[in-house]
Image 1 (cartoon, protein in one colour):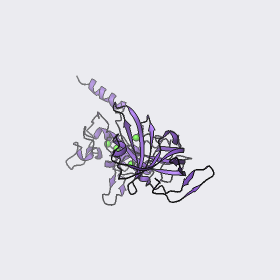
Image 2 (cartoon, protein in one colour):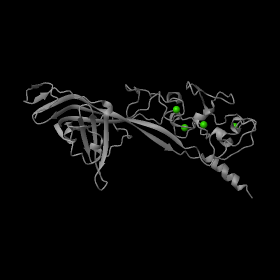
Image 3 (spheres, rainbow, N blue to C red):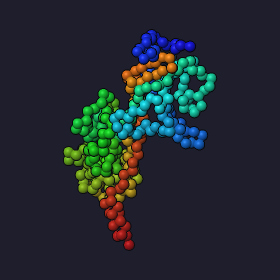
Image 4 (tube, rainbow, N blue to C red):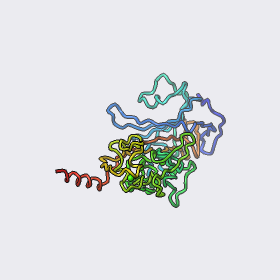
Amino acid sequence: MFLPLLVSLYCCDDGDIILNEDINFDIADLDFCNLNDENGDIQSTVFFNINSTTNEVLSFELDNSTFIPTQESITASETRAVETLNLSLRDFDSAITRDYFCSGIPDSSIQILSELTGDRGNIRIQTRNITTLSGDDDGDGLSNEEEGFFLPENVTALADGSIPVGTNLSIFMDTDSDGIPNFRDQDDDNDNVFTSAEIDTDNETGEVTLTDTDGDTIPDYLDTDDDGDEIPTINEISDPSFFPNNNIDRNPDGIPNFLNSEATTNNNIPTQLVTNTFNSTFRTSVVGLFVGLSNGEATITRDLLRFGEFDVTESVLESPEVPEIEEEEEEEEMETIP
Ligand SMILES: [Ca+2]
Ligand SMILES: [Ca+2]
Ligand SMILES: [Ca+2]
Ligand SMILES: [Ca+2]
């Protein structure tokens, strides 16, 4: 039997027949599965790219491994020798789905028509955070760039506009000093009103206006006293309603107290700060370097073989602590009760 996709071949000095075969995989079709044995113990991670037009599959396996797609690679280039990875290029007689690799037991009715296995080269697997200037990690309507995310000095953006592996994402502007940089903080001034509710976003155009209720040049989303009445917004917000439209403390004209400088009587003590959620997206890219695939008689070689890439978004949830000073105030207040 010979390979059906053979285009041409020629011999080289060491006697191998070198196949000049096309290897066509869509980079967006790379996928992976973590496999456990019947005891639930870690068995392996298999990466695969299925060409559903030709029923060809490129796959390899990491033994004793659980791949975490939201964990950035430690270095820019982690490579593994092909010989340790069960690398194969297979041609099947029928359509292959991800179940073939992920169910643990391959469908025995599916036949392999031809197979080449990796016998040289390296595979590089890289996972990196793909935060971009134009993204909106905290989903508040302001782009990461508008919230103080920038490319650090000496860092050059990659082709897709994202940052290289290892870029420290905690060094950026953090107006309320709660350890969460503004571009990932849903409440940038920790006043318990989400930034998305403190800016005015046009529903049709998406255009954002930075509201400044008290005209002190600090926009409401960064202002801890939005109406300038010297009572912090966090103490004018009804607890447990954190949103302006839910705020029960308001005057008869409907203006919530925290936006009304004439309403100064409320002094709500918050028992919690709004929970913060942001999205962090990671891209895993896999390439083969100087890879050889052989069936014992013939070999395909590629200096660069793109297996593909995929993105996984992790939703990160944080619960900031109520600042200590507020707790002390609460204790003092409790002590005054006879
Ligand atoms: Ca944002
Ligand atoms: Ca913050
Ligand atoms: Ca706020
Ligand atoms: Ca106020």
